[in-house]
Image (cartoon, rainbow, N blue to C red):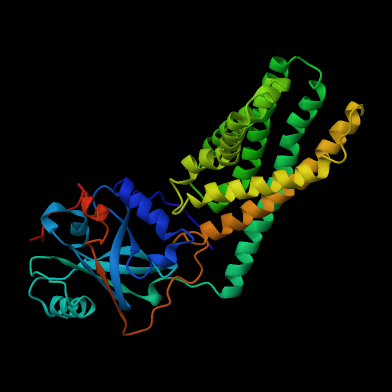
Length: 394
């Protein structure tokens, strides 16, 4: 199967938050009244992601455009145009077009909408965008093929990332052994430089897998983001090195909150840095932040559990390095396994990536979507597509 990644743009921060929530583990709370539409602007070619409210009834979608004079996105569908709909945890594909005024199709769509929302009024001035979902328009992958593809991605990620983190972590492990008797400032600077090396190596090995899993993403952007995240994480780790025995003089009221904040920053630094790259290509990229935090928490726990009993004062540099590398291998494998699991889950939610079967609607069903969100900020109503054609609109 040929895969491709497309960068979709939400109309604003509020819409981005709703889209992230829709693809989050808490999406079941929203699925009863919120879905996502994706389409390509007719004139500019931009790819738009739009959150909308909906009511389900089948293989047709009716989008009510409330206060249409303040919006222009719907004008892209004055003639039939393809789009995708994220609904009930999966992607559906279809063709959308504006129902002609005073037509039988518009009357039927308005009647179905009225049945779904008895208390709502459907003014004749509100355009209705009808989307027809069709299983015949998209190829379908069997469940076995989808599972094989996902397992293959996880395996490649696990192998590559484990190797990359092991090689990368060798830099701070060796550096730490060499500067353990050096001045605190020298040791801290050396560890920061080694951390950048670790992040760069890890980013390179991760990008080697992501190049095929998320086409369009540039490896250099990912490597730089990973190196920066590692630098931030090692900056937190360098604080005890600089403080040394001075930490014993800190009040518990200062030490405990400082350590807690530092730990949170350390765990989130890499995921946040990588999110700035991933968010341009993947819906729900915010989940990657939590995934990497969990992965590194588990990896650091394994590393500490392995090395703490083995590292003892007076050991040779070679033995210290060997123990560190052994702990690094276990940490790398743990981190790679956890992040690989979440990577597969995140990518399978994309319409172009690991999508598997894209259509599951039953013939004769309808889906009614309302463009007026029930959220206070009504973020979807702020959408404006300046490149939309104006002919054929009311």
